[in-house]
Length: 122
Image (cartoon, rainbow, N blue to C red):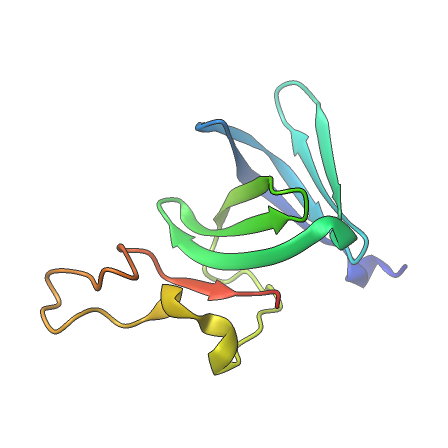
């Protein structure tokens, strides 16, 4: 595997049971690896175990929410706007999460609940 096939991000936060854990995230075609910067603990997920993924706007910039085939969720926050992540942008892939706000821009559309998101996996 060439080094260009691996994306590495520093200062990324993993949400685990409501706690934000800072660390480093490494994405490759085969695995997703998060390393806790305080304890050094490494969490790894095989790419084949991911059933769905959503790129979304969060408080710390942008985040990725991954749904695993066993029902678990992996959430990673702290991506900046300039981060290049391959996204699927077909209209049928975006779904209800990315609907525009309602007629009054002071209140968000119920489907968005204040967050912008885009499906990245089908």
